[in-house]
Length: 82
Image 1 (tube, helix red, strand yellow):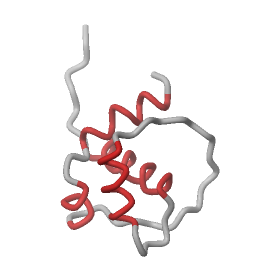
Image 2 (cartoon, rainbow, N blue to C red):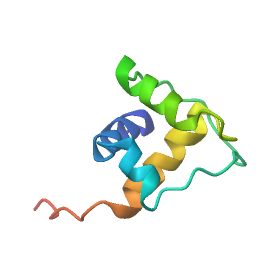
Image 3 (spheres, rainbow, N blue to C red):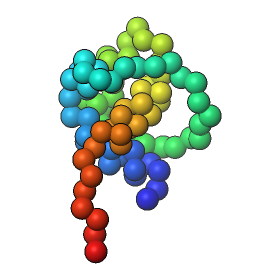
C-alpha cells in the first residue's frame, strides 16, 4: 500500500485526539530521518492537531508520524483475507 494512503487509513483510528493525548500518547520531539509525502487533511482535523501541539516541541509532521505509530501499535488485528 502506498505510504500516504497508509497514513490516511491510520488517522480514523484517532477519533478523539484529546483522549489519545491524555491516555498513553505522549508527544516527543522530532529526531528522525524522513522522506516527503503529500497527505490531504480535513481542515477541522488540521485545526485540532495544531491546537494539540501548541506550545509543544513538535512539528505538525512529527505529531502525525507519532499518531500513526501509536495507531499502528494499538490497533486491533483484523482477520486475514483468504
